[in-house]
Length: 64
Image (cartoon, rainbow, N blue to C red; front, side, top):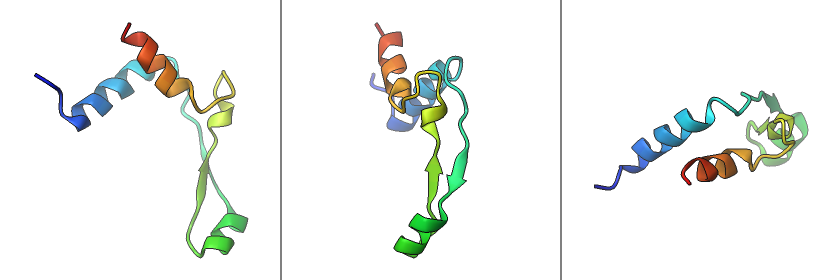
């Protein structure tokens, strides 16, 4: 039986939690002014790998 999408997301979150840093969000005044909306940037470049791709890559490798 296939998991529901939300269950898959929670499973992935639990698997990567051990190795992924929790990174901050930073309010962007300049982009917020340009868009007329509140814009926050997620600082994934602060991961150990310096990349936002670590979450998906680690999860995929953990399934092998």
